[in-house]
Image (cartoon, rainbow, N blue to C red; front, side, top):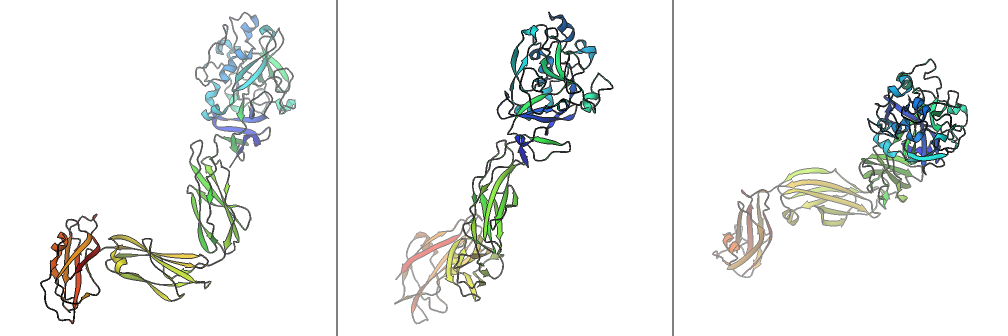
Length: 571
């Protein structure tokens, strides 16, 4: 889970995964929120410890001021440390004024901790953190040599001022975090100590060390001295070119940035560079909810502004109790089983992304559960395999509530029969006659749907594959005639592709035990009249009948072979 950076208390530790210095995570502490003069909606972070030892500025042999020639420059806007803190380049140094010099071995005190060849500080931060840092307009005092008063500048990374740490001065507003000398004490990291050229018995991770501020010593006689917080937490000052001074970078982040809900093993909350997905576009729950049945809940899509993969968390409330999660995943629907113990049910869904940021939830109306048991249909859903002839399905319908039940029988979704069923009696679904003949070769579905008077229903589903290569059609009963039939004309709506076989026969003595069938295939194909040759019968009366034989033969399997309708007349 995630929480807002603004929700953390002052003094909380924060880290950005991947932002490392000397190979170790940089741990910050929250020292202010919406600090006066800082960007609106900002949270100010300061490194918990001294992360490196560096000079504020190198000595400047060509400076007109003799003190700055030997000890460096205390004007912060021109300082080496400011340029290094705000650079994302490997070769970060460029002269800031005519006499400026890089902090190389020759220009820092006794050659300790030069950093002119070290990459800029921003290169140690992740790209996402760099993008999130808010540019901050700050002020700093000027030494009388530089005209006195104050000047402003805008940076992303900066050193705190004398005023901001609560040690007097006029360059900024005191921060509540620094309420005492103890709050101002800072300890170097083990890596800062081990990577320092300067060594001292007092320089160790478990002892406070002094750290630089951006404020100059305001005395006109000290244009080379920079303010610092000493090891006791009080105010001090020292030469700008001393590379044994501690550095604690500060920055501002938007208060809306997300962090982990709980601290990690370092006691730090982890920054989550992520925006939550949008709220899912609605949630749909069936208006009718019945106990001992299944319902499908669906919901709309969510998108993620950062392009992350989106998932969904569905929660359910039963009988107006608390919401509990019942589903998590990428699907946008869920089938739930309604229990008899439920009287009311409600659902809500929210989206989450790969960094576990969550959207707001969208909530369904409360549904009242109808306690009605659906009917039962004997047997089980099944695949009946391949069918080459008409067939029947027998079944029995029961209803525990003894409600009247209506049955609908369907083939491929089309209703072929509806009726009020007798509960407990055996019933038969007949896939015969026109219902069979109208089916093309291939897969089909038969359904039996039983619905009680309260709307509860059950569906039994069967699948089968029709596969017929040869078929003969004839009338169930001949058509009677008053006299001998002498001629007929027949038309058919059909599809007989190349390779298929098609024959049509008629007879005028259809009531005989062995009718005289005469081939009229050619007449059907040309649409011409056929004249019967038979003039005898054994039955009591004359009668007309027709017989059609179809065989798929070598026709393309993708082609349909069928007789859709037969028409005509005789006399």
